[in-house]
Length: 323
Image (tube, rainbow, N blue to C red; front, side, top):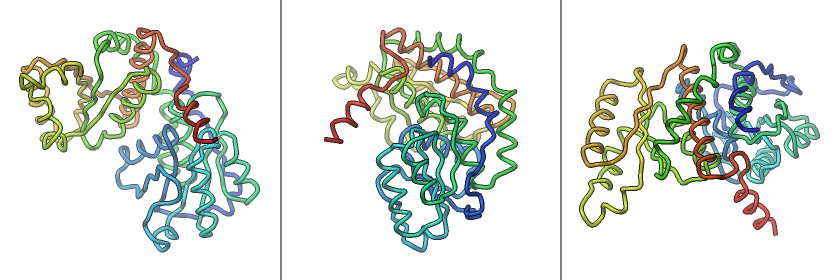
């Protein structure tokens, strides 16, 4: 049950990743993480948490077009919770064909079998039979082990005690009630882009509703002008509900921009919410915000009368393209 997954989320940070075929793991400080959907969210969070990490996220077939020289200086990490993601398996085969340094993080499936057959280093995640978006903590720890980031691995383990997802349920339920009947639009600073994107994904996959996201200051130069509430265009925008993820650690100029934008929207009659990001550490702040997103999306699903865990349209799509 997805509500149990949310309540027990902190336990994911107790996971002690073991790198199989460790002797073949390339020591690197540059990486490509190839993964789709929930299987690359951990890499997005790593970039937000520590921007100095040199990570290219690739969500497509094949490998990023950075040239053979660029690829050879990076460790290619193939990430798929199910281990059966078509695009990620294709990336594995492309990396193998080019004889690149590579590693796998997955819970099961073809990728684990390929890694074992080809003696490729891999971390096998606990198979909790949940959706990839709900296994971000496991994926993050698996990636850190492959990257050799022992200090960050130790720091992330602290979340097992620091993170208390259950405390966010009432806030999430209340937010879901206020947003109900609207299309959520999540705004954050550039440094919290992955958090805003995660919120959007959780509304899509768990809540089964459309949702969108963007970042300040970029949206101040384009998107906000689409909500200037001119008479004939007003009906197009009245169904949006804006959620501002505010972080006291953001640049003061970004904080000012978000405050001004929220007031502009409110003055024009748009529905707005302010969510303050809080936590004992930067990583705790990130995952507490994500726990709130999980509960909001979960209760949104309940209010709309939809099943919150499964993603039937994704499965239908996979069957159709496999024909």
